[in-house]
Structures are given as structure tokens and as C-alpha cells.
Image (cartoon, rainbow over all chains, first blue to last red; front, side, top):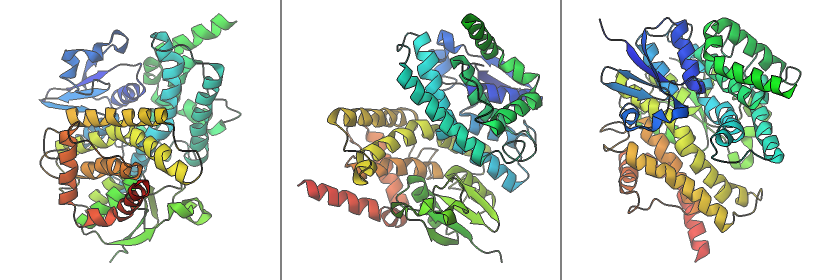
Length: 229
Length: 228
């Protein structure tokens, strides 16, 4: 029997988290290879030989090394290592719609949420940059909410992003938004009612793995909320 | 026989250009549906019913609508409307093309896109003034950071994924060629592999390359002459 795939990830990284949940939901056997970003493990020479881009997630299948979550999930799906529901390979049109979201989200949801997360949490916490001024935070949030507005208006006519069922598109999209818990940002359900309901649906459909994957984020969010009281 | 796919594009848009070249190379029949971005045709209600994101490129296949160049590439490939060389069927080669197409958003599209917007599109349309020298330096620095990654991590072979041209090369080169409009061309001493690769891509996609870049080449020559 072929060896299982080695999955390199850190649950602090949204795409790592999304793909981890997908693997768990699909009950895909994989060798667990956590890479601690906070300890800069991705910058070691050892990890460089795993993924030359020194990012997570990445996979190794025998001699084959691959990065980029979109590429990875397509590779896994083509090897029947995901489920038809998560990445609809049989229906050309359904799969094209999942692909459309996976491409769209890079420069929309991912870019805006990543910039906010990085400037408001990651850089200050690591002493790379000071905490952003109120004016800058306002701009970062405005960009995120621009994306949420597009999601609300253009992507959520159905229960999930692509029709009636959870797909990898939902996992990747939701993961980017949940990341903002580290910035104490949560989606305003009056401003973005569809997005708010969709996030709950994703969580229910992906549990218990969703809560497991988001444990650190949820903990930090609650701690900071308590500190404010 | 099924009607040909309708392809909505503007050769001013790098991904639209890349996919146009791919369709030509593959000799794929398509209905030519140009959208003039300079006339804001993408913002009309009519176009909104074609592509709700109001961008190019997009396609309509019967009643099926699709946007996002990479999604369109995969859809067309699986309908045998591209070639095996352009979007490989082999699992690992395909995964490598997918890897590049995922990687290029943040690493190539974003910095080249920003330089193009601030260095040409916004000033030309009166949206913003020309960038200061300092700002220009920063925009170029970001682009060259990307070129450095391309040079170091992607170009061990003749093309991005092995020995043959794929859609990855078309998409990647299109973003860099766009910068001609900013009077920027790749320094072959600084980025020798990138410079040679761009030549290779150009040669292996003629005559469609020159056809696709006619406007960009004309505009950048005009701007170069205006400076003299």
C-alpha cells in the first residue's frame, strides 16, 4: 500500500487550517507534520528542502513536493483523497464554480484579511512594526468590509458558496475571516447577515474539526474580550 | 454542433491577454467579445449580466457563465478546448502549473498590478497624480522582489513547468510585459533567466504574441518618444 501523504501545516495559517479540516472531513490518512511558524521553523534549511517557498501548507507524496493550497487540494482530489462533495470533480460546471471562488478569493478576501491580520496582530506581536494608528486600522477594516460586502452581495445566494453543500471554497473563505478573531474583529450580523449566517453554517458542517482547528484563535479572542471587561 | 464559447476580454488586461493567446495557440473556436475597459464597458448593466464581478476575462458557454482566468483555463481544458501541452493532463505537471497559478497572485500579479495602476493607469485617467520618485522606487522594488523569486525559484528549465510552454508561462509573462506601459523592462544583467524566459515565451507564441501586445507596444513606444 502506498505511504500516506505528508501534510505540512500550522493551524495559525488560514489555508493550512482549511485544508486540514478538509482532510479530516474526508477521513484522508495523512502524516501529521506541524511546522511552528512562531518558532520560524518554516525558515530552516530543512523545511526549505520540503517547500522551496518556505510557506505552509505543503505536501510531500513520495518524491513529489507541492505547495499552494489550491494546487494541493486539486492534486488530492485527482488522487481520490478528498470527497466529491468537498471538491466536485465529476460535475464540470460545479467544479468550475468552486475554482472561480478559489481564484477570486486571493486578491479579494485573502488579501484584505491577511493585510489586516498582519498589520494589526502579527507584525506588532513580533516587534516587526508598531501597532497601527487608529486611522490605519480604520482603512484596513474598510478594505476587509469591502470584501465582505462583495461576499454578501455576489456569493451567498445559496446556503454555501457553491450551492447547497459545503465545499473547500467555504472552508478557505471562512478560514480567512475567522483569522480576524486575532484582531478582535468579528462579522457584524446586521451589516453582513448572509455572511454571518454562512459562517455559522460552515462551522456546523465542519465540526468537530472546525472547532479543533480554530481552538487557538477562539482562545485568544475570548481572553482579549475578558481583558476588556 | 454546440455553439462556440463566447470569450469576453480586453487585450489591456494581462490575464485576458494570456488566455487569448492560449485560445489562439490551441486553435479553439470562440466568439470574439471584446470589452473596452477604457470606455468602462465592463461597468454596464449588460456586462454585469455576463459577469457579476464586472471584470475581464469571462466566458459564456451556452447558459454557463464563468470568470477568473485560471478557473476558465481548467474548464476549457477539461472540455478539450485547450491542448495537453498548454494545460498538462499528467497529475504532477498539472499540479505544478496549478502551483504557479496560485503563487503568482501575491508574488507577481499584485506587485506588477500596483506598479501598472500607480505608474500608468491612474495618472493617464486623471485618477491620481504621477507617483513621486520615492513611491516609484518602492513600486519597482516590490516588482523586482518578485522577479528575484522567479529567477531563483521557478526558472531552472526553459519554461516555468518543464521544457514546454504552458498557460503558467502565458499568465506570468503577461503580468511582466504589462510594465512596458510604465517604461519598465527586465534588466537582463540583474535577471538573466527571467529575460531569456520572456524571449522564449515571445518566440514560442508568435504570431499571437505580437498581435496580443500591439496596443501595449504602441502605447509604450508613444510614451518613450514623448520623453525624447
